[in-house]
Length: 606
Image 1 (tube, rainbow, N blue to C red):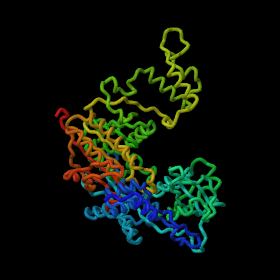
Image 2 (image 1 turned 45 degrees about the horizontal axis):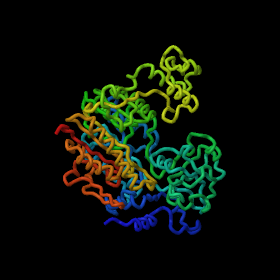
Image 3 (image 1 turned 180 degrees about the horizontal axis):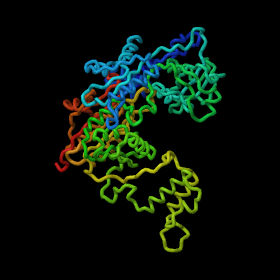
Image 4 (image 1 turned 30 degrees about the vertical axis):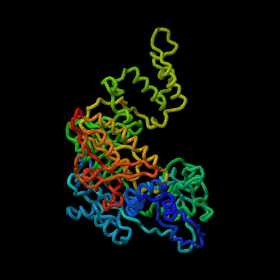
């Protein structure tokens, strides 16, 4: 039975980090305040939907798991430049030099022990000593799952109890950060200046501060916001903004790298060096560039499930930031053609940079909206590099000038063929002139702020690819750690699914008969996962689900669900559940929430 929204809301209030009856500071046990015990707030109708899909206990476990990072970092080795054993040796030396876990590092090659490691969960009731011992003995490990020997695990630790110096009953100096900043800190990042919202008075460089997070709260206008003005001075009393809302939302302790005044004066830089974290995960920033790539395990498996072969032509439809793109190219031994598209100029530049860093030459990135990936004639599908040179030159000169590359605006900006005052009969383009003037007046714009030129595409011919990977934009409700989920509604979840179906329609047209489509998302929403599979199989009779290797995730959801507005959603049918992979964040694998479906494409004439 579907739980009524009113009952769900009542339950939500009971489990929320916001208490129904606010206690005074004197009544409150400070150890209960200065700890990490978050509780996700969901839209009541969304929570009702997920409870109906998973059951109350299972969904409760999923919600709790989403608030924590995975207990390990997953690294994919660039096997064209190095080997897993060589990377393990280098990482072990680096981490030992950093003194991680007192330098107690052991590499295990025993297959069963490694499989146990891959699937060992962090139990809530597990003692800190047990976790610490396990982490010390298994800090760097090679994945022994068949087909994933290029994957390395680096064990983290947590949750840790932090000593905030509460023995005297006095509140510590404190820094409040934004929710997105806190989620990054839980994954191993430092606190950077843009993420700081508020700070105690009289904080100087070198002070020890507790770090808490201001999670979005419902506003009077029906929206969500942190309800705190940046630069607010904290007094350490209940009069502080979001004081009670921050109970159980302390993510660690650190040393300030700037004074309070400096944090709100400079635009960038590290504000707090986090030396005591609730979750301790090693940082891999600028480490072994070109040899390794930090990537979630299910994402690695999605690229592997595509099973790309040397010499094939493959499309990655929503490719940024390029992790799966480069994984595909490496699996192909850099032989063939991998087309990577994204609609963001800067993200395409990121893909180009990553491919160059990894020494991959078979990747060609284009700026292209995946909803417009199919063209109907060869002339429609030409990339920008094939356009008439004068048009490309105009665009290039506009971009160079907007980035400050030219001082001679009259001579450099306006091409002769577009001179509006010309009387020699040449074509005069008012549109180009207006675009040039806008660039001069407004600057490069958000999508071109990184500089650099990218090639544009108007799409590709039908049946022109051997395989297509569609890692679709989604609600991202499987990503972790996550401290906020209240903004998604049943309607917004349904809109995500509609958008994905339109993209999938493009993918189906681009793959030739005999080819393969792999569809993946990083969400726990069945409507974007099993619901898409149902749409695909019912709409395109020439598609069939294919078995996946390696198979690491669990089965999909069978049946369907009636939503609160009466809409009925259909998922998988009996016998189909074992042909997809669903990664549950509350499972022993301890991954993000993720979904993979693989389709074989038979003759489209049937």
